[in-house]
Length: 436
Image 1: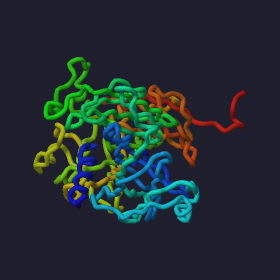
Image 2 (image 1 turned 180 degrees about the vertical axis):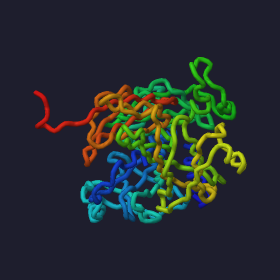
Image 3 (image 1 turned 120 degrees about the vertical axis):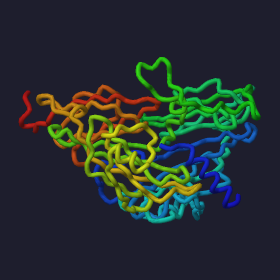
C-alpha cells in the first residue's frame, strides 16, 4: 500500500465523524503499573464469505502517561495478516512488530500479558503526555471460520465482542435478516449495509448477525444524500435526518461533569473532542441559555500543548465575522478555541475544561441535591460532589465509586437524541451517626 493510500484509509475512518478518551478520568489516579487504554472502537468489514475473513479497523487510545509502546493482543483462534498501524493525529504509519506473549511480558506495563499469546507491539509516535493520549489505528485481517461462515444460503457472523463500540459491514449484495443485539442499521457510501452498536453492559456482546443475498449493488445501491429534515412527529424541533442517521457508536465527543457543592449552582466539565475536517482551525462552544461560563481552558490531548481561549458574545462573534454552525443570539456566550488548521488525513483531539453556573439545572432543594439537565452526547458522565450519596437517577446509568469516595454515573445513549438526566443526592453520615 502506498503512503497516499494509507493516509486515505485513515482519512476515511476519521473524517466520517465530526463529533472520542472514552471516559476521561475524574481524578488523577496512581502511577500506572499496567498498560491502560480508552476510547476503543472496532469496525469489521466482512470479506467474501468463502474466505471466512474480515478486515478489522481498530481505533484505540493509549493512556498510560509516558508510555512509548502499545501492545494489542491477537485473538486466539484467528489467523492475522495484512497488519498496519497508523498514528491518528498525523495519519503516518507507525513501526510495529508481532511478538509472543513472553516477549511482551518483558515490558513493565505488560507483566500480565498471556505468555502463550501473540501481540502487535506498536512504537508510538510520541510518549503519551501527562493527562494526554496516544491515539492509534490498527488495521488487520482475521481469518476465523468459527466466527464467519455459511449456513445454507445465509452468512453468519457469530462473535463475542468485548470492545464496547463496534460496527460490522456486510459484503456487497447482502441484506441483513437477523441481528440479536439492538443496533443502528446504516448504509455505507457504496450501498453496503452496516450494523453499529454501543454495549454499556459489563460483559461482551454475544453478537450474531445473519445476512442473505438480495441487496442492490453498483451505483443504484448508493444511499440518497441525507438531509436537514426533522421528524414531523417530534413534539419539539428534534434532530435532523443527517444527525439521526450518523453512526452513534463512532461519534467522538464525550463529557464528564464534576458537580461542585449544590449551593454554588456550579459544575466544572471536561469535554473531549476530535476534529478531522481539513481546514478547520477553531472550535466554538455556544453556552446553553440559562448557564454562564467561566475559567475556560483547552489543550491538545495528543501532545499536551496548551491552547488559547477567548470568551465572546454572539454580537462580538458576528462583528468578527466568525461563522457558527448554529444560530447564536447577540447576548449568548461563546468560548472560541483556535488551533492550527487540520490537514487532510490528520486529526486533532482537544480537552476543553470550563465551569458552568446554572441555577435552573443544579440546585439545593431543602437538604437534597438536584441536577436536572439534558445531555446530548452518546457518552456522558456525572461525578457527585464530595460527601454526597446517590438517592435517585431517572435515567439508567452505571455507577462507580472513585478512589476519593465520590460517586460517578455514566450515561451511554445509543439513540440519536438527548438523555434528560434527573439526579438526586443527600449528604452522607458517619456509621456512628446512623439511626437504627
